Image (cartoon, rainbow, N blue to C red; front, side):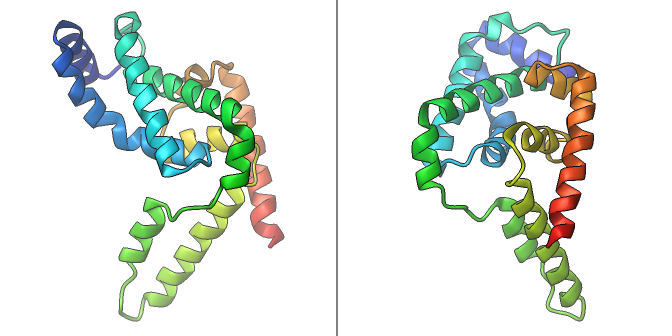
Length: 187
């Protein structure tokens, strides 16, 4: 339980202008999460992100402080993304063009010009290979791995976000990691 988040929520409940710090805190994280789980245009992801914060604001009074605010807002993000995906499934499949992610740009920026460049290029290529293979996993496997390893969520938080038992989260992670290993070693 993050006391900073609880204080931010309490302030936002009293004064609607105080919701902005919550948006600032979670906007980048949720944008990255959306980019990882749903293959939509930047504009569509921005629309989904806006819907997430609108829903969070509308239902802020239903947030229970005994739970992590992060888990609560990621659950909203998951629901909004899945709702968008269901409504636009056919269009998304036809339009999808992969974008360069922030992580890829960060790796490219950090490639050194010295003798370590071979290591940097090798690391970059491995990252791209794994990211490409993650996209081949089914939605649930991909989302659970991304929540665990990119968003650093604990099993109980993932279970709460996806509304599945914690044991199921562990099984999905184990199974998805094995699938990913096979996909990576297959090339």
